[in-house]
Amino acid sequence: MTDDVVFLIAGQPPMRGKAAFATSQSALKAAKIDATSDIQEIKVMGDWAYIWTKLSVVITLPNGAAPIRRAGNTLFILRRQAGNWLIARDANMLTVVSK
Image (cartoon, rainbow, N blue to C red; front, side):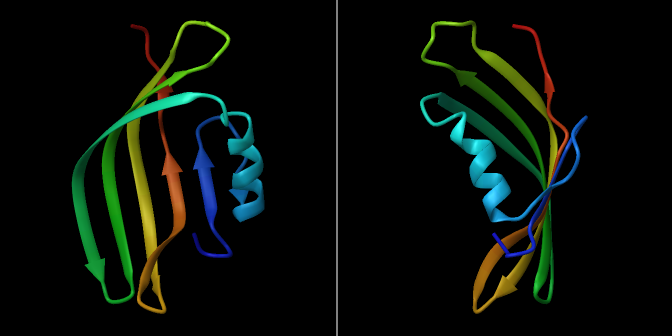
């Protein structure tokens, strides 16, 4: 991730920076996460690129609750820094889906 990374999540304010992302993920530390990604499009333009995917995620919490299923489109904007591709922006449009 770039230092100025921004995550856009439906129904929530933008999440800015690596620390905010790390904090958001701490609640999922004990969860089992299974994800499937179907890449729809990739485009590279110099030191910038984007990836559009269709993503399905199943989150299983250790408390025995029913798994949470989400699916939808995502758009990653990447920036090349020092030869590495880093996430600069992430638009996550996943919604909860029933079984």
